Image (cartoon, rainbow, N blue to C red; front, side, top):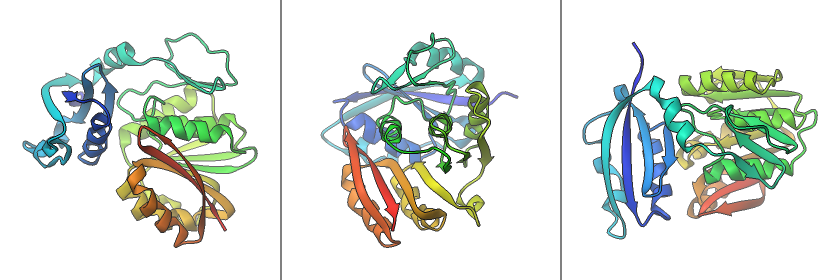
Length: 278
């Protein structure tokens, strides 16, 4: 039987910054994909993961500075393509990298990435993915070993491969993301990427020159020690998925294991930070 998703159409007023806060909280509840709308966001969760009253504990809904309402409906997985095709527009990163869907014409850029996101996170539309891509454009991946942790669609792994990485592991705990990443690897002809279904438990005895992790704050804080153990000498750790107010905690977790803070990017209060193993 096909998997069934529940679509929530959230109306958020004011949209900024509360749509981003809502997305972050929904992600921790098991929602898998988000589409921005003129009035707020569409959010999707597998029916088997849905529990009545799950939204009642959202902090953002209790905030008197924002009004949030929603409607919900079931949506079969096979109907998702029509939904994201309607909302997915090509992304341009500094005129050097594009992220587009298969039905978009090729872009005249150095790195033209084709992504069919389906229910996975990572089209480049969200600030965190955009900042990760932007930062990666200035980094050296030639001949490097790379890990894309929480790979979503595999878009970061694909850019690393296109920039000359010798070997890339792409790992996601969500089986749908793992499958989607494999599809996008093939779509972009990136044979140097190896996709795995799992978590940091797969990193035992592995070492990388660069680790990319665009997840959420809680998972990052839990897994940063494992990332540190998996970095080669002077290796780089590029993180995103957290807010500006979380940066100090992320810095503290990294510096405690001899990861030196280099700098960070910020977009609409979301942050991407770069660290290097000393």
